Amino acid sequence: MVTKEGFPIAYEVFSGNTFEGHTIMKFIHTNAVKNFTVVADAAMISSQNISHLIENNINYIVGARLGNLPQKNMDEIDTKIQRENSKSMRIKIENGHLICSYASLRYRKK
Image (cartoon, rainbow, N blue to C red; front, side, top):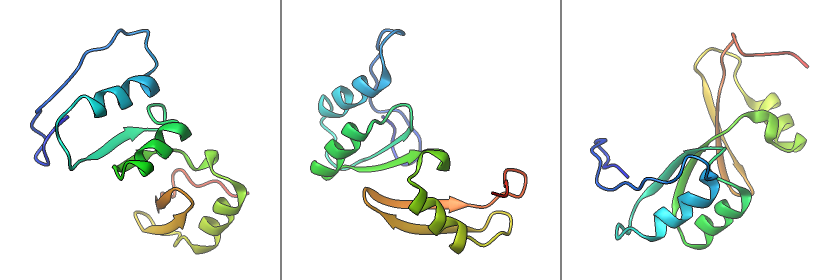
């Protein structure tokens, strides 16, 4: 856990053979900090963890690949995104918002 400035204020060490999706919720609930945002990659946050974060009014940011989204979300992004490097957009989905940015090097046509 770090401050807005990036200074560490808490940490916990877990075994290397433990799935991160199980350790993150334990860590969140054992710390006294009340107002924070969880920032994680998709491997750390399961759908169940996201539901738990929402139910407990905990803010979160999760980095994920678009390929894991339902087709309806992919279609919306495809029609709305500006195909100009570094341009981004925000759309509402069922569990929050997606912030998507465009990069010509990563773009693949259907």
